[in-house]
Each structure stands twice: as C-alpha cells, then as structure tokens.
Length: 224
Image (cartoon, rainbow, N blue to C red; front, side, top):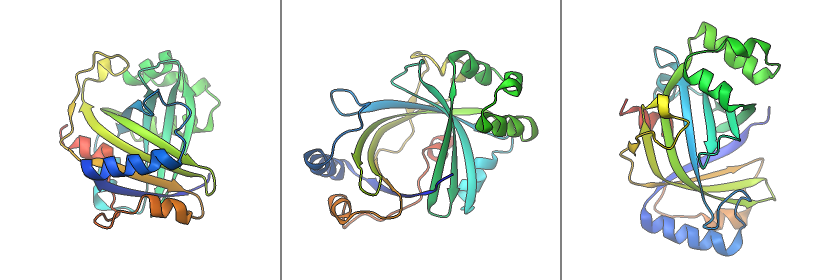
C-alpha cells in the first residue's frame, strides 16, 4: 500500500479558466476523458450509523479511511469499490472490481455475497460492513478534468459542478435526482509520489490560494 501526497485548493471560476488554459498547453489529458477532456464521476459513500467517517474528517483525525463505490459517465460495465486511506497529508487508494449486480446488492443492504469473494479489499469491507454496520449514505456527482505528468507520477485534476443526492435506490441510474451541494467554487487537486516537479509547481501556482483540507463527502453530507 503506497501513500501519495495530496494537495487541494478551492479556486474560483477565473482561477479555473487560467489553470485550464495553462495545463492544456503543456500536459496530456487522462486517456479516459471525452473529446472535451473531462468525464463525470459518481461516487456512493458508506458510513456507520453514527457517521464515523464523517466525524473523523470534521474532527481532523490524522489517520482515517472511507469506502465508496465509484463509476464514470454512468457506465455500469466498470464499477469499483474503493477504500481511501488518509495519514496526515498522505493518501492511498485501494480498489476492487464490482459487477453491477454486486453493486446493487450493496445498495440494497445485502452483503453476504462478499463471503465468497477472494479480494482482500472486499473482505476488509465485509468485516466493517458486519461489525461497524457500514451502509450507503449519499451520492456525490461531479465533473473532472484530469491531467497527467509522468515524472513524479503527478496527477492534476480540476473538479466542478459538484452535486449530491440521497436517492440511493436510483444511484446506478441517470434518474437519480441530484442537487448542487452548495459549493460554487472549483476544486484543484494535485497528487504525486515523492516529489512535485518544479514545472508542475509553477503551472498550478496561484498566489491568492492556500492549500486546505476539503472533502466532497463532508461537503455533501451537510445536506443529508
């Protein structure tokens, strides 16, 4: 399990236009983007009845984790269960493939199928499903524009149009009713391994912005 640096910045629309223009001149898009250089992400987050993951985030606990189902552009042929672990300013993501049927089972509260799955991540999730009563809590939707820079294994993303929903029964469909989460700003994320190349640091430099701890999950949970 390899931890990476993760830096986040809330930016406004003018910052977004400036950064997008800079990045598009220098860096390639992620290969999975559409012709406009973006894709839509939908995540369904899990938490305990007492909202352990949410409380740890709000309390600033240095070592924490959260689980989510994630897929892209509403394509149900590629669904992942993901575990996001955080250690101070470092983060790590583990993932395991889910079938559409398995995802539907989780969203309906059925988890016994996981006992026959050999994935270490799914076994870890099943233990917490049983003992912590992890259950789906909320949908988080947004548009992402991702850029890559291979030295340093750098990934830069611009996220916007963040929306949320409690309509979990429709989470795997386009009919889920989503609403703006209330965060009008855009989000810049910079992820890298041991070092951030000077070229990238110069590209994303915004004198008026400071790094902060921002969670789409926590932001969206303000509404449910």
